[in-house]
Every structure is written in structure tokens, then in C-alpha cells.
Image (cartoon, rainbow, N blue to C red; front, side, top):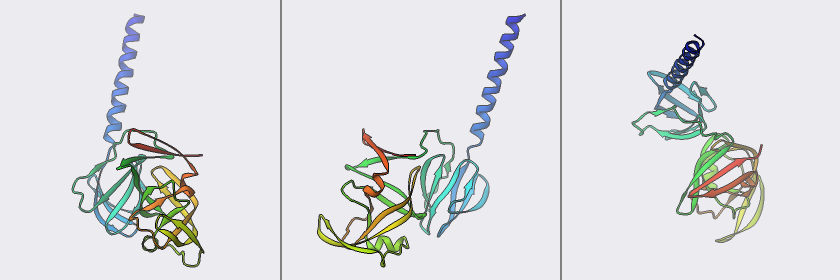
Length: 222
């Protein structure tokens, strides 16, 4: 009799486990972008339309990090996903848990590690540059991010293209993957030719870096 009770108890546990897993899989949502504006995205989540502003969070751990008229950057269960109106397919929120909180994983492209993130909640494209003392950008990039730097401290800096004038100032926030840093020193350099913002040592000094097999992992010190 005791053996029969044990078998029945195990059966109940297994049924409960399978039911829980089925319920978890049913919580996945399909996301499609219907409209994009500055700091706002109009979405279709499953069969429902919704409007998200930067910083808003929806069920399924979906957070809007940045948006403009061309694309939107989401964080979905610790994963960064960039979508535009031209993306015909919906994106599922059913991501595996990779323990990505407070870290970012970058893929090598020709020896360079590039990624998309945000500066003051505005979308930005970065490339890791350990040779740059600061997070460094061109005047054009700074204007696109609506950064007020003209009255900041001015100095001369040595670059691969020779000496250049730079304005030094402080960014309120930079977010890359699951890493968010505040009050990061940055420079706007007059002769910078890169189409990406240099993720320099004023950011990298605050994280732990490791790389191998074509990947770089940044981990925030907390």
C-alpha cells in the first residue's frame, strides 16, 4: 500500500511539473512593430495593439530602451533586440534564461567588437576601443544624440590622425546589454572618422572584460 502511495505521489508531481512547463511556454508573446516615433513604439503584442514609451515595461519582461523613426531597441529577458518597420516577422519573448543581467556579450567582426546600446536613452552604435581614453564620438554623432557639449572643457588630444580638438563632458547614462553606467566621461573629437562611437576606457575601466572564440563578455562590477 505504501509503495502505491509513493507511485501516486510521484505521478502527481510529474503532472504538476508538465502543467507548469506548459503554462510557462504559453506566456511567450509575439511582438511586431507597427509604428515608430522618437522615444515611442507602436506594437502588436499577440493580437493586441499597445503603445510603449522609452522605459516602459510589458509582461514577458519586454522593455523599450530607445526608439526613433527608423528603429527601436528592446530588452527582452536580458537580450537586446533591434526592430524596424521593415521587419515582417514577429519576435518571440520566449528566450532562454542565460543569466545575462549586468553583462553584455559582443561578437567579433573582423577583429572589432561592435554593439548597439543607448546614451541617455538614445540609440547608439558602439565599437570597443581600448586605445581611447574616453567614450569618444564625432560632432555629428553628438548632435544626433542631442548632447550639449559646446560649453564643455576643451583640450587637444593625440589621435592616429594627429592632434585634434576635443570637448570633454559627462554622459548621464550609457547602456550596453545588461550593463548600465552613470556619469561616464566622454569626448567629442573634431576629426573622428569612425561611423561608430568608440567605447573607450572611461566605460571599460568600470567593467570586467574577457574574450575568446570570437566573443567578448563585459561584466559590470556591482
